[in-house]
Length: 245
Image (cartoon, rainbow, N blue to C red):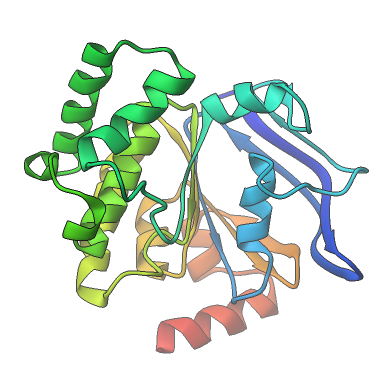
């Protein structure tokens, strides 16, 4: 499989504070990568650098499908290929669910109204909420809104979907419905990078897991290696604490 995303010496400073420190990482096409670690370890900052929602430091370099991620017109091309699902849904409150999913393809991909509508209905069916198409975001539960956000990301036909802790804003009973949708996507071949605190989910869905702490990748490996045979004491301490909880 070819490398789709490459990060080389990527750092991110906020003033004197370094949130991400000299990250080197390859993500291959079709891979599901889960990023785990304590709060404040740089996980969300790292994935936000991939589509330039955060401007990483100048000495590093990120490429997506051979395109360098940097300020300028090429960001439009990057963001056509890299969709993102946020913690807090970020749906447009004045648009119904169907139009939320239709908007991106019409505006960015110049898809016709009729084709965008058909694809939106198909995707809402795929995430299990086609019957909610005429409702507005405030009329849906958090889990339903997050499924709309996933459908909206898929509508752009991206090569990569970034998930920034997609269940962190949900009530516990709604978490499983969103994780089930993401699990289904994992078998479709779309490349996914998922920041998550859900350890059992990460183990089930990931091809590769990286554990981050204090802005660095402490350990990288398969789910079995990370969970059953961690090489780093810091990884073992973290997993012991979260799995006990």
